[in-house]
Amino acid sequence: MSSIIQTINNTWLTIAAPQVVKRDIDKPSEEEIKAYKFGEIIEKLKAWQAEGKLICLFLGRTPLEKLPSHYGEAKPNEIWVCGDRSQISSENQDEQKLLDPSEQNIHFWMDFNHQESVELIRGLFNKVVIDGSTAHQLSNDFANRLRVILYPSDNRFPESEIIFLNPCRGYSLSLSSPTPPSNQGIEFSLWRYNIEITLETFSKQMKTLPEEHYTRFVKEHTEAEIQLEKKEYQKTFRGNPENNPQFDKNFKVYLADKNNQGLAAWACRLGAELLKAHLEGIYATVEEHKNAHYPYYTRYTSRKGERLDHYFVVQNPRNRLGAI
Image (cartoon, rainbow, N blue to C red; front, top):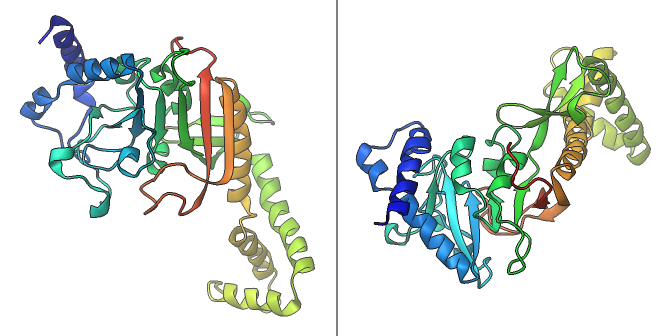
């Protein structure tokens, strides 16, 4: 073993190893930690890259889970590897998506929420794909943090990119921030991107969204269809619905939520707009794909193209090598 590889291995042991797990919260044994050859993996991938191969990371996959190369999604010059803080996935596994142990993937065993670990693979990957469930578990503005692992611009390769499902799916209330919200309306909470909205904005949308949707619904549906919806809602309403203003108010909220026109849906739409603006400040190229098939299998699907999603493709960081 060369001294360079040994140094890389020792760096992984010092920085990344304390953050990893075997599965869930189970810590790996000392033997398992020592058996992981981070330096050899780095050397092998850089050698392939020197031959013109594209090194592609599927983030949120463990060594025995199938990758795009197993599903016929990989291009001929792509080498696919996986990355996760676990060696064994904690999610329910479909045996059809698992490999024989003798065929396990090259695995980047590190916590991608630990930026010091992420720095160990700076500039390595030509493509990074994030699994749908993983995009909601990455913290602290991951779209900005992970730019450092993209391979620098090179005439030999297409522009490096990160592909991920829209992670901005929630909101939080702020009683102190001004309107419009601070920080472009994006809040980097512990586990996801939220939009930060004021109590004033929240109260206004809570009142107007159901009313506006109900007005449109009445114009587009018959009285019989409206009554059918009310009967359905009555099953969950506590109290007497007859001549009850609260029933009418709650019904409008129920109807808006059911048809994806309520407060949560509004927050998702606004969040995506604000997130795109945020991404455009980090990357020169930002593609937003709405109601489109995610280009790779995810844990949510049994086959590619099974459902429509909302995802982003980002390329060309404006500050590729700068500190986070």
